[in-house]
Image (cartoon, rainbow, N blue to C red; front, side, top):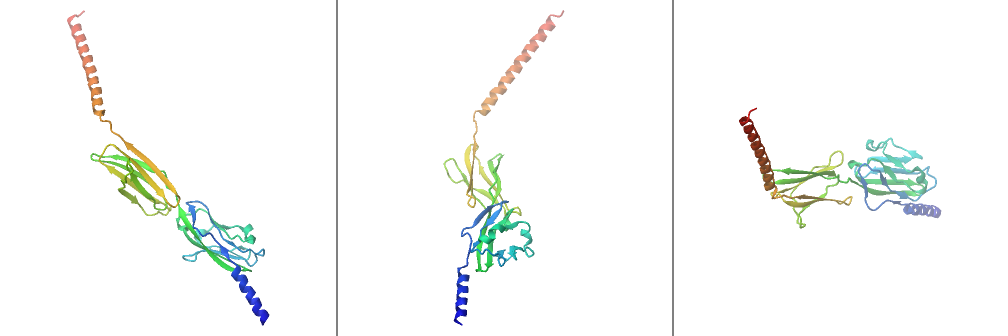
Length: 261
């Protein structure tokens, strides 16, 4: 009886010592890139009894399964078909990390790494954060009778921080439209600065905290007050030339009529 209790105590101690190790910080993955969800465990060279299951925490969808020494993907969610891979060479060394290709917005969330072998059973949770760098902002300037509108448009993810700054650093932020993320996993952003002054200098700034992306675009619009007078001088000069040419032509015709051959 004592030997049975001793054996049970040893087995329990071994189970308690078995652990799965995953990153404590979220894993940031760019749109379309490959995510590597790290998961390590106490290895056992004999993988005949090794069971690895990756699944989504929020709804228990199966992302990838491995047992009987091969991938078991019959119950795999269709969203991950042909997108996941385990490092087979690393299984005997305690590496259950999973690769997921072509990351999109729907892949963001928490993933459970469940591992079981002869030494015990444990699980860990990995958080995947989806990001997308904002594209080069597209500038458009609209001139109206009473005001001038400067507008930038761009796409990215997640929702950014946007500001319009004046020449002295003052906050001029006014109009900002950000639509919901589309199926493509991008926010559409449109931001404008409107002024009644034809002379201004403003700076459009965008920050994406997730990717540490920062964009600054400067817009300067100036007005030459002498433009009208300069144009008048040009017009007047042209009229003078035309008048002189007309006078010369009339004199020539007059002289020709007075002195017929």
